[in-house]
Image 1: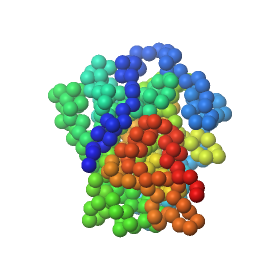
Image 2: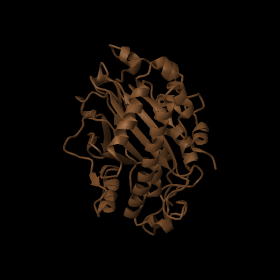
Image 3: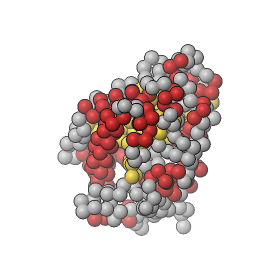
Image 4: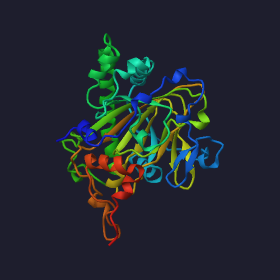
Length: 364
């Protein structure tokens, strides 16, 4: 079975690490970071000034907040997935101390000098390490952000960053990933339950308790530094995730927005102790289109740094994800062909936000 690292390596994207800047030294926005063009059809809105109607953020719409201790949580989650593709959860059982620890590790990492961070840069054919978001190669302008991706162990890179205290930060990452894995498993079954799918009806959920034993994951630590001209900058351009689901922790600085059909961009404000859960492309396929993969983006702040941690959760790379048989019937045909995560990463690398539509089956 190929590892997730190998799957990403088979589908490289060309990122330009040599163009990474020391954001804190800039008093003006470089032209290479100035987004000035608007593409309404592809939603790649390249002028994020909130004064533009095409980029308005609606305050009268709120992403659902779900208490995981609520007996009706699976039903509430199902409704949120169907109508939004995203929700926030509270009472998830993860201690606040772990969020503080992972944020301290992220702050320590991103506060290193550019020279030091580049010692832990991704290799041209790699996925782990310091650099830009993988989606950067799809846009002509650069994004006002930097990230550190962890697939499997961060040890090799952390030794480069902190030769004398790497163990402390490695331990934090291991604890955080383990907590996210358990939460992702719990959320997966709650979402599947909302679709009427039981543990016996999802064969690739290996393990006696349906614990998705061979599921794969990656961790993205993201920094969005304060920006001298946030009205013309983009922290992270509009995109969907290739995952089954993504769990996002964000500090107390706003910036995340999701695209609500028929409404526009809606802010997802930081919620103390809360986590943002969004459906990815693979769950959209598994649900036969019932649960949309939400388009989202991040704007930046003039005076404050935004920090987030995204836990990307998916199936084993070689397991075929297809519309579940329970969601197909005489009046509901299968909308997508089967695809592995490995194959889908290649499709995503080629078609980006049009990857899902490229897998749609024609009506017969």
